[in-house]
Structures are given as C-alpha cells and as structure tokens.
Length: 270
Image (cartoon, rainbow, N blue to C red; front, side, top):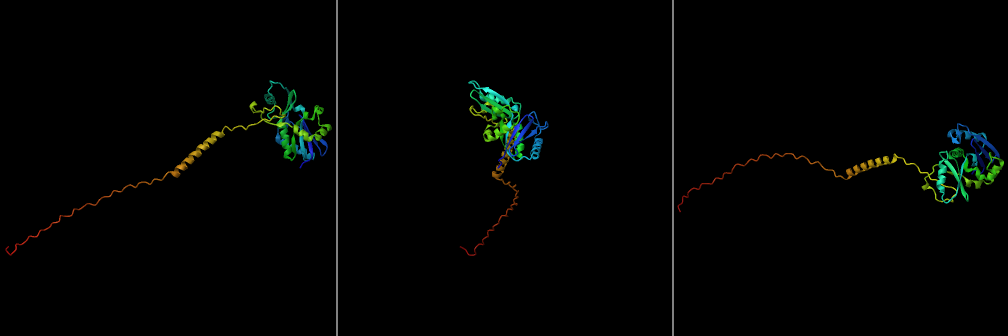
C-alpha cells in the first residue's frame, strides 16, 4: 500500500511536483509539441516525457493530489433569486467553456453560488500517465480550495505544501467533478442544495445497427420457416403409372353335340 504523498500544481506552461519523500519541488515545463494553450497535442509523447521525468528524478510511487492554478480556471458567480434557474445557468456557463471536455465544481453561498471549470483532458492525461506507472491519483482541486491566504500564490511554496499535507484527506473532498457532456435541462437534478452537480452522458445510438438487426431477424425467420415446413410436411409418394394389361383373346368352345340314340323296335309285340 502506498503511503507517501505528492502534490502536482498545474500552471499554464508547467507543473510543479512536490515529493514528500525528498521534501523537494521539481518542475516539468510543457513543450509546445505536447501541450499548448492548455490543450493536449501529443498524448504518447507526454507519456514518454513523464516517464523520463520520474526516472531522472528517481521519484517513488506516491498518492498524488493535483492542484489547478486559478489562472487556468474559468470562474463565474451567480446571484440567487426567485426567478433564477440554477441548473440552466450552470449548463449555459459550461457550454461556453472553450474546451471539448470540462471538469467543474460548484461552491454554494448564502446569496450566490460560484461555478469553477477547467479543461478535463489536461488533468485526465496527467492522471492516466502517472497511474500507468503505478502512482495513485486521488483527485484534482482548484487553488481556491486552499483558502484566501493562498489565493494569489503563483508558485508552490513551502507554506502551501505544509497546508496541503496537513489537510490532505479533507481536501480530497473538494475535487472537481469529472464530466464530459452537458445534458439538457430536463436531465439535471432539481436539488439545488447539492454542492456538486452530476451530469449524465448518453452513448450515441448507432444509426446502422437497427436496420442490420432487422435484416438478420428477417433472414432467421425465413430459415426457421423453411425448416419447420420441411419437418412437418408429409412426404407424398409418386403414383405409379398403371401399365396396360392386354386381355388374352377368349376362344369360344365348340358347341357340344349330343347324339340321341335311335331306339330299335321291339321284336316282341305288345
């Protein structure tokens, strides 16, 4: 079980890595051919360079908490009123974030609420690469989760490191929601008191799947019908062609001639 902890503080052009084992901060500068304007350019090359970063600095496996700098977070505050539709306001705001996939967080107040959003793909790419090497990523939090004292900090200082390690377990509850597609207002939760709003992504329907299934079904029905017909239809025997029988000629027997004997007169008189 991994016990050591680490912090990755993501900026626009680099990230800072603090390793609890070494008590030292390392830097990883983003190259334009890998990450540019917070957009991932080449994921395979990023993985290669991160592996080299870990090996070169002899980093041990840790539990990593990502911190996203305020400078790369889109933030908007919404006033709470009777006429406001919180779910719809959040959806419209997220739709205007210039990234295909967005991670976001909602912070509720008494009179207003704040929505924070950032590029999900950037964090997810780092997460995937480190986890493929055996590290454990516990989540990503916005810089504002560290409190007002560190709100304007531009770098990962020793004071921030101490604060994060002291509140490591508590800060894990302040992570961004990792979502990709924003649904229609009908699919949003109606519970406005939740700090985090979960969005649902539905898999697209393959438009070619239904016709193919119908075709297969029709073919199977045809085959089954033929088998049933052959199985239960009695076989009829062919009637033999009657042969012509020629009766033998009937020969009439010659008439029988019966000869009546001629009596002789008696010699004796009556």
